[in-house]
Amino acid sequence: MALTHRQLRERFSKFLVSHGHAEVPPISLVPQNDPTTLFTGSGMQQFVPYLLGQKHPQGTRLFNIQHCIRVQDIEEVGDNRHDTLFEMMGNWSLGDYFKKEQLQNFFTFLTDKKIGLGLDPKKLFVTVFEGNEQAPRDTTSIEVWTEIFKRVGISSEIGERIFLYPAEKNWWSRAGEPKNMPAGEPGGPDSEVFYLFDVEHDPAFGKECHPNCDCGRFMEIGNSVFMQYKKLDDGSFENLPKMNVDFGGGLERLLAAANNDPDIFHADINSHIVNGVETATNHEYEDPSNQKAMRIIADHLKTATFIIKDGITPSNKEQGYVLRRLLRRALVKIRALNNSFSAEAVAPIVEQVVQTYNGIYFDAKVDTAKIIPVIQDEISKFQKTLDRGLRELEKLDEINGTIAFDLYQTYGFPFEITQEIMSEKGIKLSKEEYDNAVKTHQAKSRSSADHKFKGGLADQSNQTVKYHTATHLLHQALFDVIGDSVRQEGSNITADRLRFDFYCDNQPTDEDIEKVEKIMNEKISQEIPVNMKVMDKKEAETIGARSFFKEKYPDEVKIYFIGKDKEDVKSAYSKEFCGGPHVENTKEIGEIQIKRFKKIGSNMFRIYAK
Ligand code: SER
Image (cartoon, rainbow, N blue to C red; front, side, top):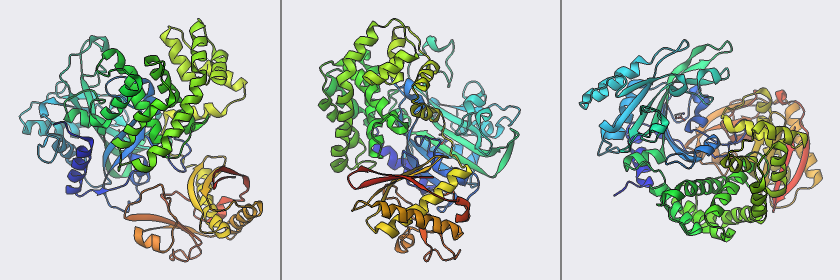
């Protein structure tokens, strides 16, 4: 019997709990108050302050299963192992255990038949950082792996079982290898484990196969990052206050290894969704000529379903644009397989996504009905112009940025789709040309989102920190003026402004909003200290600390409070569940103006302030 994704989750949790780790809930896919990244892209995202030295309320051994989106992988989707949405199973040691215990534990989890996955150790291969002028070769990991393999009777020669690679492959930080890391960023050498599948090497990918070869014979199933360095302004590294471990293994890939099947779309985490795609397109997945398109459809609609669940709707900006691009690309692929497809037929695919993750990320009863119309609406809008646009594209034997931008405006073809269709005809279109055309049309909003596809860097710049504290004042001031029906629906901060979405029973008047602004500025001029206290979740709720209903919180939480008395959270003006960072005193915020107030849905409102 194949291992199911639910069984894998349970085994991972049990294993880590038995090794003294506390479970931390995943954060939302759309990071709150982080202007530099569109989506949560790794399990460690919420742990950055703790890797840098802060104390975590739940201790020094932590784990979680975090859903992540890596839009930069979108072009890779279509093979047997890439996806835009995946889950990272992770564990962290915050200055607790280090290399020896981490590598041994992960090996035990992979190979133990009772408490782990029972993989054959002969099928496991590992990689280690070879060293450079900034950081030495990771000889400890080489020794630890040699010992581990020796114990199970496997010889571990370098170049046969243990492979050394440069920083490009065996260094991890949110920005990638050392040269790309900004000052202040944590990172370190890593050691990856690869699983060998019983498939032939494809010489198209190089003469010899090795763990990092892209032919698909080896699959990376886990990465132990030894987070021990912080980059300095002069480009060198210093040691972090503590030597940490940041481990992440892709759930879909671990499942593939456990089932010894290199196609992540065969495991139950994808197979039902693929069945939905078969129904919608009337094509068989097992026919190899359909697989690429069907994987893209399954992946993109899955990711879209998750993005919508986290509160985003299709638009021309930021997360909304990614969502639009995923849905439109999925439709182009669906139509290539079945040109009589109608938008209603997308429902079985979305239903399968929600069912697959029911009780984990979705509540099937509520979410299916909410999400399907959003997808159908976007798809049917695009479908109206799709055929005409495709005919236009078909006729073109050259393209430039302006034509591509026209195709977007007239037919709704995202640049990337035009680029993909043209490249199938062997015609190149550069992003630069397109961006220039967009600039000329003074539609810059969309290109700014693009920089963020790459990164995952938390912007801790002074201005965003100020806006973050201002958001807490705004939240409380709304309660003061409008009353208890106020509920935060989301917030977003850039270096230029803060945005706050909320629900309330009655439409606030202009006077209400003026009052809110006035209260915020009063609190700023009263120079009130901002402090943080770690508390029991129940206690925090009892004293009325505001939480964000879309977020799940652990039993111990950080409460930021704005109040004259630094010790007394209860009497503070504002108290909120929050990870920080914040200014130390409200006076640092400076004057705040509410620039715009608008209705964005029934009983839903949005405020922009700066
Ligand atoms: N942060 C590392 C990664 O994302 C390990 O968790 O691969």
